[in-house]
Amino acid sequence: MWHKLAPLMLSVLWLTSATPAQAEIACTLVHKVGDKDPVFQQGNLCDATFSPASTFKLPLALIGFEKGLLQSSDTPAVIYDPDLNAPFKSWRQTTTPRTWLQFSVVWYSQWLTRQLGTDAFQHHVDRLDYGNKDLSGTPGKDDGLTHAWLSSSLKITPAQQVDFLQMLVSHELPYSQHVMDLTIATSQSFSTSAGDKLNGKTGNAWAVDAQFKRLKEQHGWFVGWLTHQEAQYVFVHLIVEDGAANGFASSRARKHVLSHLPEWLEGH
Image 1 (cartoon, rainbow, N blue to C red):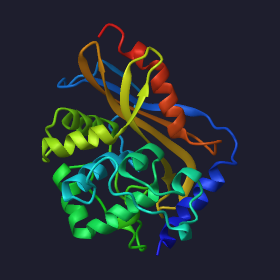
Image 2 (cartoon, rainbow, N blue to C red):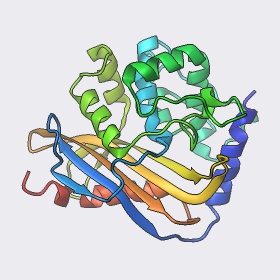
Image 3 (cartoon, rainbow, N blue to C red):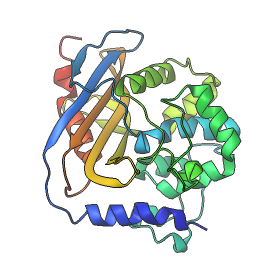
């Protein structure tokens, strides 16, 4: 039933035993909510498209709450299927919407999209105007329902990520305030080096060639929002690593944001 998860599992296992790589900041954007111009920007790829990877769990949570497939931060609790052979202990357990976002559980995302079905899935991605809205998946594999956002057909730019986050925290997306509040409340919280609390989501993708064969280059996202000195901000940080590395680029992107966000906000 869950055999289509296998390629992802193999890539994860390969990655954890790899060697270090060089990282480059592709884009960092920090915006005060409601402002078009950033208060901080770096990198030359803010308008380039990348797989959203697990940052897509934020719009997927919105869709799940809107459709009633997710009822609260802790419901439904879906029992883990051992046949999945998930590589991480945190994935090998009953999972709720909160732990799904906390541990970035891929199989829970795929359970959710299967419950939606292809037509509803496409309808809601179109409704959100998310990225290029392409859920076709890998050519010839018919896997868009379960893999479109995983180094596959769905793409988004860092600038588009900012637009989505601004609308989420401003309650301007085409869903009820209740649905947006549930998504915000269910997302994971962190603390910066200066003690500010923020909410965010990592995402780890791989570059692919013209045949969608996965390459060694990693793309690591960390996106989210915070309140700083009574003002709301959203941030998007994306790094590119040029080869195999221990762990995930997304974890290093998150660490960089938590360390450096206070200086990016300095004076604001």
